Length: 557
Image 1 (spheres, rainbow, N blue to C red):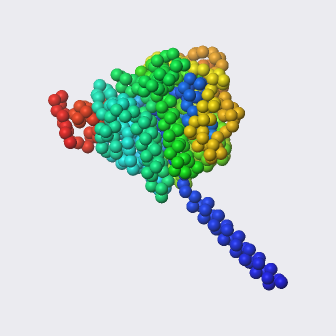
Image 2: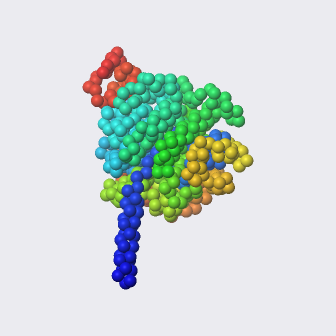
Image 3: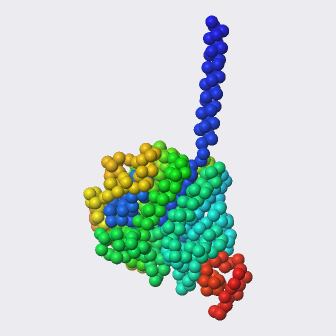
């Protein structure tokens, strides 16, 4: 009997050992998550309906936001190129030379080739990387373009904006076609709406991906950036006609552009669901900077109630609408007030992909790995954000804990105020049933991830910024620096610089430390050799050609 018991015990132990090994194999061999990063262009804080306004209804974006983690203290840089450089490198733009305005197609520069960027890091982990949409980090030579920097395919454009239908771009008095399929000029896409092109190509990448590899898909929308001067807000007439509750015609067209992008988000979610990979995916949604409101850049965005616009260092220029969504997150369906900067995505996503983010300690990046912080809802290890230092324009801003320092400003202070439209902010005006009936909500419902109505409305309230109008505008940053308590005064209405001189001293000292570590802005004069009129009216990698140009020459290649 004892021998029988001993054999039984031995066999049982062996069985448990085998089961443990099987469980271990299943756990450790779990496929890395697919990562889909959706970057909107010039989308304002108040241009998505999960932040409190019902004027522009974004059901697909909202459904993801409510079932993920809404990042309510999420900061980007004030304009396109600097934000995109921070996303790709994990570094503040002052450390890559990308801190001043944007990169133009006829400048002989790009994001430094010495920088290893996000898709290259993910490629090391076995990812298949694809980009659709806008690049805006250099195309002077092929070496600066996406296919040479870790991406396997690209359908989209290299410069900063374009007409949504004809895909030409105006820059610095120059004009030319900017639409690529990998390195080829995509003439065949003429007349096709850019949001639809991006959406269709993203869906195609998802369906045709290499299933033996995890996918990184970077969806960089043109929306809601303004187009060319002859058609700054390109929207379908039928879409605009359906929007009857907005009186201002430009705002109505802007709303149509945003809602078309929202539809695109839904199509991407549906494609992931159809491929049965939604349950092992991470989706990030972000704007690259604040919205150009009140006619800035011929646009009609809204950052209400935040102060300022795109390309200013006020909250309206740098505090972005954003969230992270994934079934893999433990603490989700919540609004996060953890401090997060766009440079954090590089180490955070590298961690989420299975990499060891400690490698970045030796590489001197500014981004912080916040995956576990978000996953477990822990206190953020980020205690400060450098919003920017622009020594050419003489403006800079730094945030430490709840305190924000503003030194100088842009445009001589012309865009330092508060701009609408406000939109209908009553809860009863929010189309909750339309949200629940959206295709994205249906897909989330199948994953048991769609929150109930009470949770959705609580999240929406928590994600809505309210301001108390304490003391309006005693700040004159062109005369002397200003200080704001962003936690209690997110609308920057009460300058506390005189009240807290010691805090001012601390922040000024830290700003000086950052300035000492900065490198000069890499901006270069416009080079006429890059003018599309010398390249068959196409924006191209002109630095790869030996060309001397004059007003009467045309280069054929």
